[in-house]
Each structure stands twice: as C-alpha cells, then as structure tokens.
Length: 271
Image (spheres, one colour):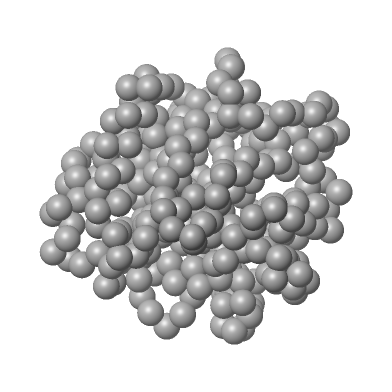
C-alpha cells in the first residue's frame, strides 16, 4: 500500500514563523462508526487535542468509502476546520483514493493548518510554487505480514522521488509495523532503508508506539541526511495522548491502538 505526495509548505501560512510540527497517526479503522462517537471525536479533533496538535498530520487506516467520516472530521465542532478560510487558522486536507491489493481498502489522509484570506484548491500541484518550502512526504502503512519487504521497497521509492522531483529533502512516515513479530532483529540487515547511512530513523527501535501493554516501535519517521538540516534536534517523539490528556487505557484504545509519532521541522528544509 503506497502513495507518494509532494507537499510544499510556506511556513508563515502555517502560523509558524520558522517551524512546523509534523505527525503520523494510525487512527485504527476511521469510518462512520468512529466518527459518530462524540467522545472519541472530541479527543481526536478539538483544539489542542490529537489532530489539531499538528501543523501537518498523516492519518492512516481511513476506512471511508464515501468520505462522509472525513468530512465530519474536518467540520467537527469547528467552523475553522474548513477548506475556505478568513485571516485566522484554518485546516484543509488531501486524501488518497482507496488503496490496497485485496477487498480491504484504506485511504491516507493529510490534514494541514494554514492562515490567509483565500479559498485554496487542495491539489498537490498548488504546492509546487515558489516561495514555498518544498519537501516530499512518503506515507506508508505496511501490511504486517509483508513489513520487511515493503519497508525495503521504500528504498526504491526514494530513488524514484529523487529522479522525478530532483530533491533529496524526503520524509518517510507512518505505521511501518517495524518491530516485534513483524520485523525481527535478524531482518534489519535486509532492509536497505536501515542499512544505508544516508537515512536517519528518528523513531528508534526502543520506542513504544502502541497503546496496549506491548512495547513495539511500529510507527516510524525516517528522513534523508539532507532533510536532517531541517529537523529540530531531539524533537522526534511518540505522542502519548493517554498520559497527556489523562485518559483511561480503555478510552485511549477506543481512539486507536497506536500513538502518533512526530517531529518538528524548520525552514532549513528548503530544497
């Protein structure tokens, strides 16, 4: 399951003078049922909570064939969570087509924050104009049984991105299923994205990105060495919303079985 998005962000439009907070979150089967749970939606989408914590966030496991749940997320209790905006903080989104090799399909959803006074057509090409800060985001949610193979294949995706867009400012992010039973210690030597020293794994093998009692570093953020100049030192982390928002584990699991991973980027990421 793969989608490559080229997103350039003019940082002042994101209401940050020199940095943005980027996140990736496997929201676990986000569709109409979850979107109808007001308690869960409050935690996901209200001010300073999970989605609106970020300037840009990749949401995975969007199981929403008609995009009704996505629309509800974008509009939920927030008139500023819309496509057209006035000179205050607004949010918009880019969503993929349903992806998957079998009858099981899910979408990638990017939600991003900006400010201004115009309506914007959220087509990827609108993000390729100067003076935008350009970098490539490669979202990936691997199939657990094929995690090693699919993570290794990302190496080839990066090569294609470098050729097609003539940039080495690249961030790979998402639920790689990169740990525990899916990627074992002996597997890492066969993953070029890991063995090639031109990549930095910002979420390491000791991290725990799961809400349950397991300790597994499934969710990752990987950047190229060139992109490292735009990474704020020590900013990469797992966001434990259960602790931060003082939730019970049961309520936290109603939201997802994963915690988001995040990193702060600066305008030094300009290609």
